[in-house]
Image (cartoon, rainbow, N blue to C red):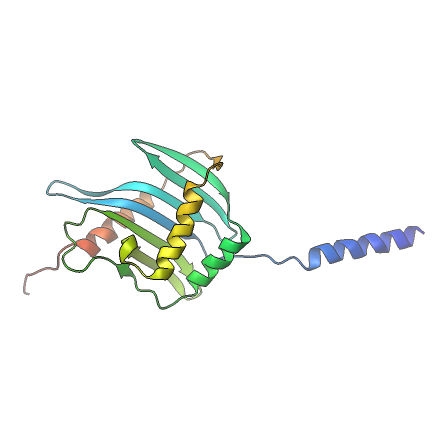
Length: 182
């Protein structure tokens, strides 16, 4: 009788654990929303919000409210996991979706997607209403996660190094083309 109970228990454990599918992203996925500041005396950004999603689907968020920031954490659901993986697989997306013309004095909201694909790192800098439909859709889903009520409060974390690279890259992207001839 003990052998039958043992085999039944073993069969149950194998059947419960054997069919479990583990979803993963190819790498970390970051979404950043900010206002660009490029005046005669300073260059920089004002963070609106930031979300970083790990390969396993854990996320951490920074939300700005006035001069203070709030920090949160959580886990994305299966449907959004699938949407992110589909988005990441789209190789047709350009690296920038900005208004036409000289953007050197642009001071409106800018967003950035920074993620890993199966072929390497991808960065997309965009103005929401100037971007491809798939970018607008995924950013709307990210905004819904960021703005959802009932998130778990997290301890603060530092993204200064990341923001410094964003400032440099945005400045390079939005700087007027050089008119100097060599």
